[in-house]
Length: 328
Image (cartoon, rainbow, N blue to C red; front, side, top):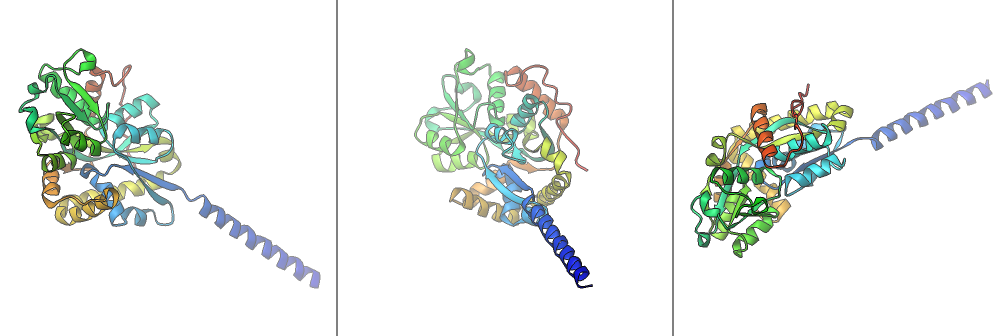
């Protein structure tokens, strides 16, 4: 009898250790949800979601959320395709390019913001219309991103071209903080940037608006930020992607319904990331140029893809029929 009791106790202990080991492994294998975004108001859902802990609360014990900050879309897309990111707030142009180049490894699951870009110029450059950019230097956040494409469309409509394509306009790629310095020092004449950088350039360098958001393209009704997820992550963790999307929609509604309250939290996160909060007038001007939405207009994405082909940013047929995925 004593031996039987000993064996029973031993089996119970082994089972307990096994269960503890499984729980330990589950904890160790808890997926990290790595979310990439920019310190731009056009990425307000991400800023708000990290500012008030919405993302952490959303995933709870199912996944540990991590924030990754970028300054331009192509760099964020490279990180996502390399497996260093799972979800990213990103411009539609690098989203399209990444989808095509990777054979569908990165897919769009939601919209985030429309509009929010502006072309400004130094007063000394005497640029009052796009045609005045002839022989001028114009900065964009990065070659191949959304603002770069918008600039090239503006130049085409004015009969101008990039100097590398036989034209007279020099396009200078630089990160948004560096563009401010370049413009202040007179090293570039103009810049096409997303908010809040457009408003900051006007306030901090005395630059003037040449083409406002609504006159850039399609009356300002174009996506400036979409949400992209790595397809492999989507397939492995569909429940986490669904939870994220629910949080994203909730944050979008808050931005629409309580812009003043949301702006304060967005600004607090901007201060944490950049070391400086935005002045109230800069925040207000920036928000006027942006429409927050969770919807994706597939037709506009196809139009963007055609513009990308024309500028040589999209090779081959550029089929994006499966770019937008539905999350259940």
